Image (cartoon, rainbow, N blue to C red; front, side, top):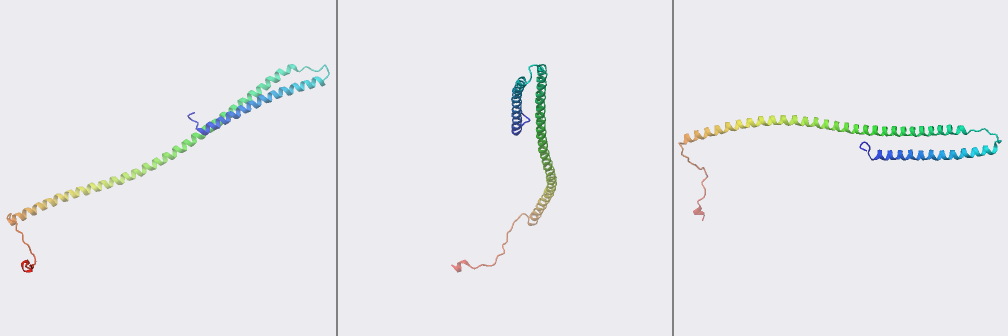
Length: 177
């Protein structure tokens, strides 16, 4: 049941139904043969002279041979059914293999794409880390320069801060009012 999907089960059921129908047909034909043999015997008994040959000793051998033929036919049909089942199973495995192969190729392609992306991201990260270190060094240098300039300015002004405003002379507001 595990190896067979819905379609295979339907096919198997169809083959089993065909085998059963065939066996029923064989049984029916055997019965018809027996009736025909009986009619033939009756006809020969009526047509033949009273001293006809007795073939009754052959009837048992004929019946055994007919039974062997029927058994061989049933065995052949079972073998054909087994062959069909094996073909369906092989086809199922072939389809599963092909599907798995496509999935494997897709996954390998995805992995290769992700490797390329990882390489790009690693390069970008290294570049950004290098740039960050450079900016940190530049910030430290700018802070030192700023502190040094502030010390020099404070030393020049002696600590006093004077603010000079250069502005154009404006109108006298009291005159305007």
